[in-house]
Image (cartoon, rainbow, N blue to C red; front, side, top):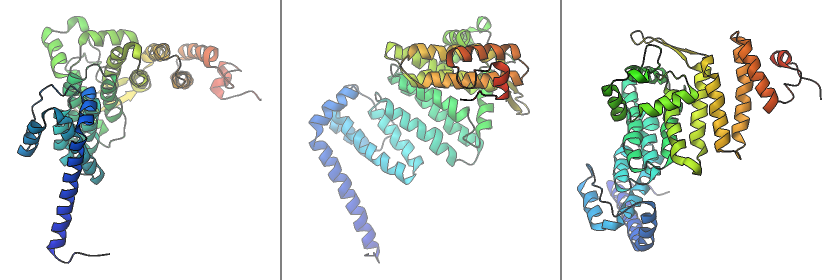
Length: 369
């Protein structure tokens, strides 16, 4: 193996990389006629989009290329891939901003950029407030900009719902409780003490703030609440269900199972841990079983079954939920509800463990083969 003993070797190496990058760019230009047609299918390249805070060379190249802006975006994507592999996430933020400016009509661009902010950059920050800022940046990017250009793509609604369901709702990040408290504070400005929203009493200013700051329509929130609630809107899962529900509506007859999953999984989580006790002053945050969410959870599953009758994962998930609900309700002393769920389970998804009846099911007594 040859080793460079002076700075000359480093310079040569850098020059080679620059030449390779330039060669790749030229090859992309040579294929511009085909590439241009492909990108026009994906995105309206005739729409003029201004580069924000891009260096002069990027602005210059974009102007020169004109209708071949997609070619420049492909080059930047190549660079973004290298930065991703090297774990240089902060540099990737600015690069991704240029890419979203060049190709605003491609959903994957926004998903990639938002995920980098909320998942990669955020965990590099030692302070919880800094982490939270980057998580919010990722959410805001999808919600405020990505959906502005791609309002008809259910994938972005799924991604946004997933951020609330997973990044905020689950415990995958050591700072997850901080995120939950911050979101509870944000939504608490619009709710009663129990997290419920009195839709009839919302002021015009509050409705405008919900629409402007959070891009949430109070009428859609009311509809969702009546279908699957009662929701405690301070919980991130409630907002996850909102965006999943919006995605289901956007998908329409096309269907997009991931959005339905966000809805029923989020509502199910609010059954499991939707009763929230939160003190904003002390920061005490405690969740527990919320039996009120039982009917809504069952309806969310059944609506998903109607929307996707050929999908086998929904009935399997529903059956698992019913089994879990019987035991949780019984443990909470709610045997009437537990027995009702058992009858549903036995009639529609019964198996080896339900043949001997309710009491035997609770005791785990199964008949022999």
